[in-house]
Image 1: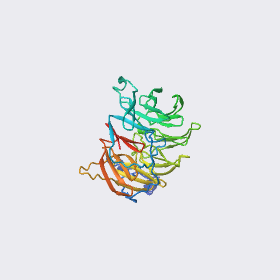
Image 2 (image 1 turned 90 degrees about the vertical axis):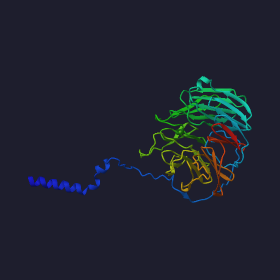
Image 3 (image 1 turned 120 degrees about the horizontal axis):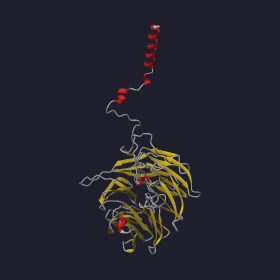
Image 4 (image 1 turned 180 degrees about the horizontal axis):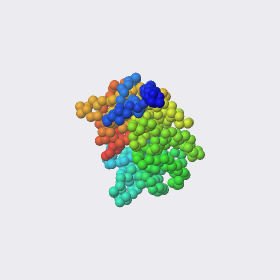
Length: 420
């Protein structure tokens, strides 16, 4: 019996030794300071690539108005005919957002005063939305859109105002209580916007009446960049703070498809989800990037991912021909939008004596140059025919945004609007 017991122990030991590959080395697993990577970080963001040195633009566009914070309902900013040269004039004040419509400039300040200027900054109308006691101890954020001679203003008080552009009278006010955090998309007879509970609303532009609302899942931690909107041919695309993107058919107000951007690698996933503006090209294909680490091309018909690349870009980006043009901190990136191949990824150096580092937050394709706007107010111009031809100049105190109206560029900084 004793020999039999010893034989069983020997078999058990031999069996364990031969299955050693299934065992976990607890010493290396629990060793203090030892970090085990669940998923390899294969980001392309710092990988220098230079497969092209110029881009050809087939068509440049004239811009008469800039009705939306991201130009139009599908956030597609075309190559323009602009050449940014000399400053024409400026308007000093602390404006938060600006738009152009017909021959007007629309601007709103943090004290809730909204203005209508001509394009030489002569004031035509103005009015305050709130009394001082409302904004005195509370920072109000505003979003703007304009359509059919009506200005739409949403804010983080949960209100939406509609103003008649001809006389600046209030057409209607909708008070919904929960802060609005997305941009406003004005499309046909309705406007669309999202609140901080990831609830999307459709309001009638004439009356402010709620056509419908749709609530999606929401997290406790959130950011205004969690909520992005785009519209293309009666389809509404939007993201929420739960890292989801939805396609809603505006013909029947039904969800057509959804896609989740969640990462399996919990070590690399940020607590707060952020997304770039959703860009929809002329064929309806979607391009979007998130701080979860990937840039995607998505089929608008069914939400299938056409390609994805490990690039984290949350700035607005542009499409020109088959190029996807992007910026990240000091880098310029160009991808083939059809296949997602990375064609150009270079750090743009500052050739000034101060050697100040750039942090790019905006981009524009002009008639002859690719323009990169830095947060510190610098403008970097790269010649479209030869990227090595670079010019750097300071154009404003800092940079918040730009718009185009009647082929003039209006640059918004923290203390002025500058016309070029």
